[in-house]
Length: 155
Length: 352
Image (tube, rainbow over all chains, first blue to last red; front, side, top):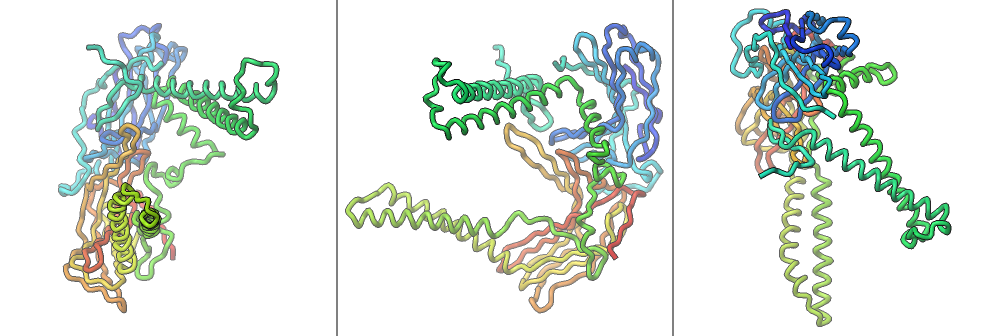
């Protein structure tokens, strides 16, 4: 499974456009029940997870047959103004494009491509920030291939 | 040695102990059991009411009175409804991914009858609207900030002290009457000592709260503009009333991370101060009841700071904090929440 963002640095302006390409390869179409593509933010850290889907698309088996699983698919959406990406001590707020593949045997495979939603000022080059600034964005992974991990069947 | 699978899951920091599926299975079993117990109990009630003679095997002795039957019936019905509805809800959640559930919830929120979420109306999802903050116009500056509801009231300590003292006096009367009539109750007499200690503690706690309530006057905080924008400068007016001799008075602007998490059956809260900006700090401040202490200050909000954020379990809150160490009154700390928007997206309001 492969998710590629249109910006190499993974920085996206709040309210701006996001384009991504995704593809599922080396999985026979007969073994796939459906694919879900979503643009979402979720929290990580000490607290329970908050998750909010901004853009969601579900492709059933018939739609996948028409679209072609091995062909590159395109995703477009306009990002919201908030919440911006944040990495603090207790809370991290992370945006990502998540691809979830449902297999016929009940297994699920998930691939994620994280990105940073930042303000206009952060996209522009600016002066050095102070020590008190809580926004310390980690360097985006830069790998086109999302990390893949498997889940046990949900039911 | 093979471990017995636990029918629950638990979050420890960032780790989840136990399997999520085991937790779900445990919940499903519990609610299915609740539903079946309700069905069984309600069936007993129906049989007892409708055809008690025709089914001789049913033990109807316990349900023979009218009131008992109704109470048993209502409890069974409640158990049946709670178990059934929750079971269906949990089953519906199992088949869908977390993203799909979130998308369905978002779609339901956008239905016109239900109405869009408040934060979506202003175009800033997950940012608190802060309309309560801008409801009150100020006298010196544009807005008067509302104080965060203090968790220390005076009614609770007063009730505790009163009830505990009353209980102690009743116990004392029982012990004294026992001695008077020649029936000494030594175990009650011994219990009087720890009870008296608790009574004294509760009375002192009440007095402490009362002194704080009566001695420290209201704190007024006004701000020139709201919401705040990173990189902006804002005027702040502080007024402290009362009869106080403060050893130290501090005005802070803080950004606090707040997370809620479940640990077993408890819901715990953890907070971390990500930013602490001292706006004003002074020693030996005297506050006179005739003239409150007043000060005009300025906030310089740093660039590139995180905006206010509120999720279901996580939040980032900004607030102005006024704290004082006083003598003879207890120290106080009052918080005034403010909302910080991301840059370039400010919404201008004015009550004037």
